[in-house]
Image 1 (tube, rainbow, N blue to C red):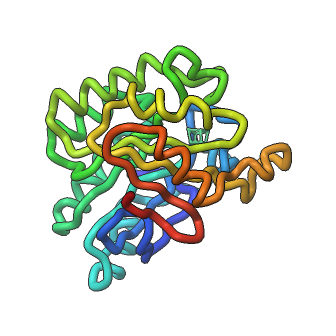
Image 2 (image 1 turned 90 degrees about the vertical axis):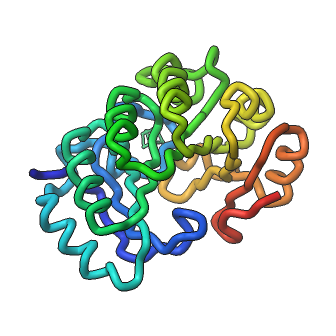
Length: 233
Ligand code: SF4
């Protein structure tokens, strides 16, 4: 089976808290957030193809140093068959699996959970649900994100919400976004402007600004910045 790939990173200490992970960036995304920091991965046709068996070989080369694999993108769930196949192969190696998703494909998430192929779902919650497209773009779909949360709850899966915090765009809404997600853990992630349209430069909150925003939120929170990584509050 073939998979459209942005890239893979054999050793990442900061992508899956508490794990050393092999990270796979799937090619292609069904959304077009204007602030996307991986624009080069959005169009599948512009990404390389790789056999899932060859990707597994790369994972096995790193096996001695890793205990987990992270699937991210782009949006991994739009290549559902390849994602399911890779998760099966990775679980067969005894590795933990984290899925990072925009929540647009609840059916794929449900299939993964029904087959016990994911250990942690990391679900982006980008905006208030009644205002989703103004932040995540015209192709985004808040109903699907809400359905993904329902699916995760139905299957009692481990999950976290990730709120990308962008100054001047969604920062005032963050307490409401955290509340509506109702996740056991929410990670407030500083928007990274590297590789993004220059009009978004300067919109990345500092660690101190994230902490101040977190103080206005309820529930269990982490913050994540490029410099300091993920930190519990
Ligand atoms: S969902 Fe993620 S990968 Fe897709 S356009 Fe938005 S930020 Fe980029």
